Amino acid sequence: MKLEVKGLEYRYSSTDVPVLRDVSIELGESELLGVVGPNGAGKSTLLRCIDRILIPQKGCIMLDGRDIREISRIELARRIGYIPQDSSHVFPATVFDTVLMGRRPHLGWRSSERDTAKVLETLKLLNIEDLAMRDINELSGGQRQKVFIARSLTQEPELLLLDEPTSNLDIRHQLEVMEIVKRVIRERGISAIMAIHDLNLAARYSDRIIMMNGGSIYAEGKPSSVLNAENIRHVYGVEAKLGIHEERPYILPVRVCVNR
Image (tube, rainbow, N blue to C red):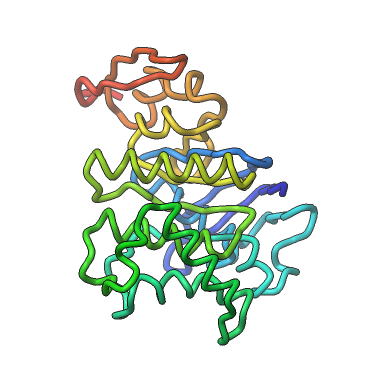
């Protein structure tokens, strides 16, 4: 799978100011691309455009050389799994039925033994098989996040889009979710784009990072080259100290910049 985003521009109808400005990225197989930047930088909008939830006014998005506007909604759902930022409001359903919904692009409204086996396999992968008959609304935030990752994985996508997958999770669940995502990418050979606020998680798990600011890409490259003190000061307005562990940076915020 190869994803190409070329010259993307998107603006909401209520404003003349573009949320995305001339954004271009490429993504190859088995790559985790982290997208970082302050609130309002355009991270979530970028993911929604790639999943064709939003239609950009300019530019194009190509999947294996095909414009996604020419790909049917059902085929796109087979190829792209999207995990939204807010999963707090969901219809009452068991965990099993929620994950089974991920098979919808493959099965229509009737499930087969293969679909059931795929759901059970994915629940086991995320270590939540004991939750199968629980109501999803009774689960903790971390458990619910795993369920929605499981639902996307049962789609058997080639590309996974994760919008703040660790938001509202404690540190244990953050690491568990990220380890699962990284393992799935490696074992299944899929690719992923992850919008994330936590720079240390982005640095630890991303193969490559783009840093967005004001709807544009400010910096792009390996975590060690993008997440430096100068870029963090300019984009976030924060003074930070950085260290290196296992060739990856870690960030310690020090103070808000008085003069930017």
